[in-house]
Length: 451
Ligand SMILES: *Cc1c(COP(=O)(O)O)cnc(C)c1O
Image 1: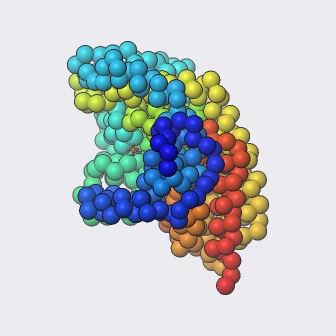
Image 2: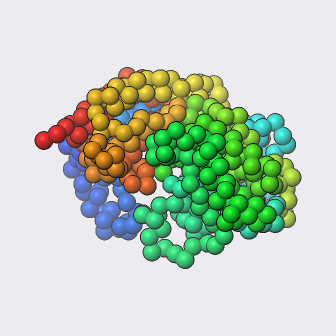
Image 3: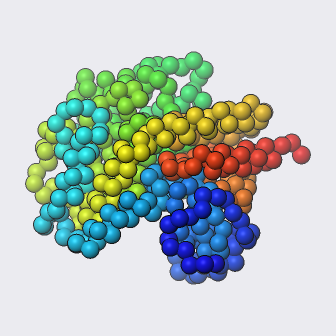
């Protein structure tokens, strides 16, 4: 294989020159098993050498179609030239000072962008962190401090991270919580609006009333600091609540002095066809949590909220050594500029316009596809046993494996691991997207075909 300049000029084509994983990947997997602990699981043991646009080039010279973006991170493209240049330029100036010791402008500029881009024209403040989980933890710290109340409400199927507090906020025991307790107290879980699984005809308002009556009966608004919710759940299975559900929850929060906290770590930064998924129903959260797609692959996350809430915390109460690292901030600024310049929210809507008809046609041919759902470039197929409607994780695993063998990276999700999730880079060439979806279609039809 010729020496490829990483990420640059990658031909936007699926190309398999070995079986997957190839011999070089298999060698590296053996080293991985001897050096990396087993708890860090790998979905597709194909080691990557370079990536860009909609493709991942592996160490054996195979070129895979990327429909995962490293879990909704490389929305602007992998090794996007503008991001690489910004990080390079910043690295030549300085790599770290710690913003809490001696500050620097890129951190401010990211917070200014967050104030401009997140929903609502009110005065806002932000703080930056390294990971989504860390940002979620800090949002809860702010909410508790600002309200003086302890309790936090989260939802069925929620995913908020892997730290102790965020494990408690996360719903699924496997793989996230199993034998990792005890968990943080004062976390209460209520039912989401899950149209595919709810009683037929349950409206968003009715689903909200179901959750709110439980909150009132079992928590009490006067004890509740915040409701933390993903506007579209990611790991939980790309669950889009029925229209009216989120506004009803948000309105109740406002009426009761409870903070409405939107975890937009996965949905944010153009993924769902708007800058933020909350915009779809004109929601204005008190706090917005960002991460993943914000910085084109560098680790950065943020909490942005109403100035009087964010500023309630005493000086020194929030922070961290690396939070808002200058390289990550430079990457975020370049990523945001690129989203603006190339209208990547529009690109996400175009991805939906290509994918939904193809996936809907597949569902019409294949009763094991229980539902096609999602918004923008956050899409999914929920696979079921057509006879019973029960979740079908075995089929999902089979389909995902077939896609992987064919060189198309798709992701698993759902509490029952029966939801195939698509999170392509927003810059994926349309032909590549279509080809990836054709491979997925073929994989579903083959795996679901009766013997
Ligand atoms: C990924 C994710 C997190 C956690 O982010 P990390 O950067 O992995 O810590 C939190 N919330 C949501 C909705 C996520 O998708």
